[in-house]
Image 1 (cartoon, helix red, strand yellow):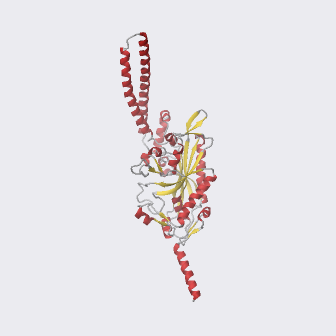
Image 2 (cartoon, rainbow, N blue to C red; image 1 turned 120 degrees about the horizontal axis):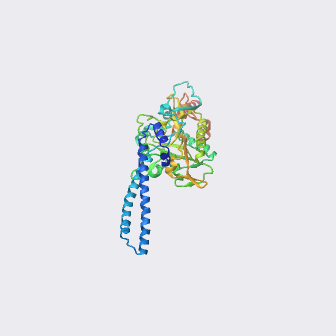
Image 3 (cartoon, rainbow, N blue to C red; image 1 turned 60 degrees about the horizontal axis):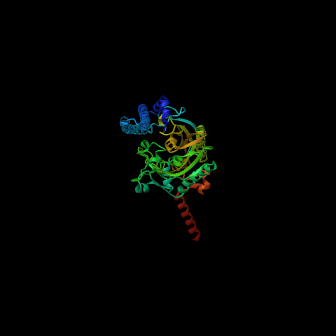
Length: 439
């Protein structure tokens, strides 16, 4: 969340950011009104506590001097009652203020284009889409024909947007995971497999649950939620700690992720591009404020390196203010080319959250004699199901087979995913040939 002191001192800047996001500025005025009320109550409470101490001393002095203390005792009884009432109002007011404070999104960075998603800006394109000499099929049809994907049975046992990965596709999935982890390990990221479930209090350290509740799965009768990304668990790893940040703390989290995908009815229901569960390798960094934009570039370049190695056409997009999430100050998406749709689709995001998450998680660092909040950054190294869909479409062959990028071949153990029908046909042909020789 934002620093209340910053909002007090820079209300115009905060309101301008709200305006850029397309959000009403009224909540800032309401927040500042509650904050002013709380500060007045705090002053009254502090004065009453001071009066209580003074009266207590006056009573002691009067008794020593043999003076009457009736009036002083009367005041001594009245002050606690007034104090109790004021403290109650003060507590209620600060709770309302802090609750509203959590609903104020992060400040939009000055480099972010202003407007809705139509104002998203392409930064750079990498690789050129291949010109196929045949009609491109979508990944779902290709993988189903290869006996590598079964969404029909998955829908019977789990519902829509679930899947069974089969045969060579299972190896390809884990090849992508191991490849990404190896790349990040060489860059000295600490590999982490976090809990896949978090308590509400911990989850709210990383996101705004009110705006994210329709996307997150809640465990019935438990204070637990399934994570939508490893980012949520990694953010909590150093919660309520004071860190030594001589060097940034760089983590690579591997996890299954779970999302409801509410509000996407009829969109990407076919295949594995938008599913309720998927695997992802997530980069996460705890940084000093003065180094966070340098770390942002490092995260982005890591993913660009991985995507280049996978030989897919892709591009980077800076999201406009109205399309930027609640928590980040700036987000750059990476989009891959999908031949069947003749368009680019999101494969991952790189975000700088400044100290927004750190304030919620109370993650700080020692800066000489002063304790300050860290900056947190996150980036998708690879979301495997979406990447599989992209690789499959871009590497499809006329016979329905899929060529495997060179960077993955040592992990898969094969260079091509071949149609099963073709294998059966070849086997039948060999058997017929043997029979003819016997005759």
